[in-house]
Amino acid sequence: MSDTEAPKIEFPCDYPIKIMGEAGPDFQKLVTDVVKRHASEVTDDVVKVRESRNARYLAVTITIVATGQLQLEAIFEDLKKTGRVTMVL
Image (tube, rainbow, N blue to C red; front, side, top):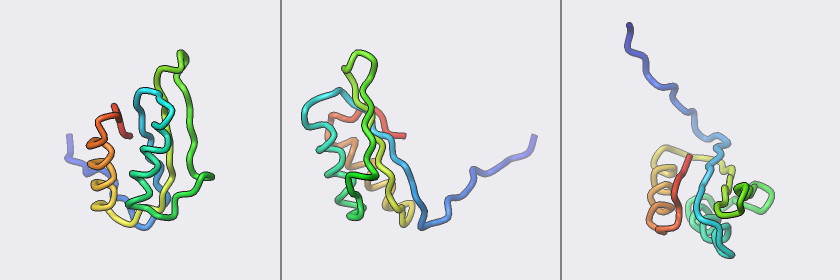
């Protein structure tokens, strides 16, 4: 068995970030504002929202133009700091 590296991302690129958490009236705005701090080009047309079957959770997918690994790490860290995000993909 050979060692294989994960494929490298070539920046800049379109990069979808899927953010999940408990539904609330301000969850979408909260996560969108966090992402906008790091990717100011985010507009409503790159934000997609999906409720869970029982409407208890929201999945917000935001596609950004990623400029580098440090930017992505900063976004993921700030999303975790909100205390309301349960998963980021």
